[in-house]
Length: 167
Image (cartoon, rainbow, N blue to C red):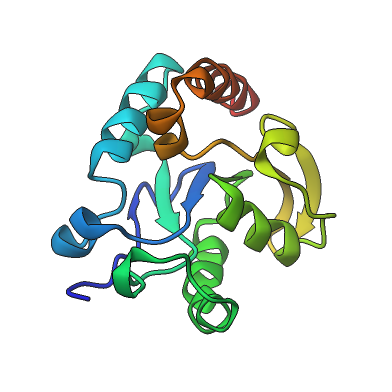
């Protein structure tokens, strides 16, 4: 581990995108989503009329797990306090977990019945947060669309729908 990756973007954003954990590139740079998944995320945001500078992007984990493995439950519990603080500061209208790990965390945090990303992506769930009403809007992780190009169209369509919720 080289850097903590807290997140970046507009602290007044109405949406916070939440990934799992930093990868190698993110660990090296200290910035979230700067590798190939980040480049794809930037393109999908632009297609939906959003910009990286106008949203906030973070992860459930702020540090890269050893060997880039999936974070363990105790690691998520220990680290998620940082994401919670960011959400309390930003007070977004929409929280968009990307991928199964972040969906698991966000759904658990808001008391939503757990589901796999293939079933829940693109479906907004309205919840109460300490700062007010919030929509939870799960998305496929951009890396999933890199490895399975069939998911790209669904991710793009979901992002367009999310952008419509912000207007």
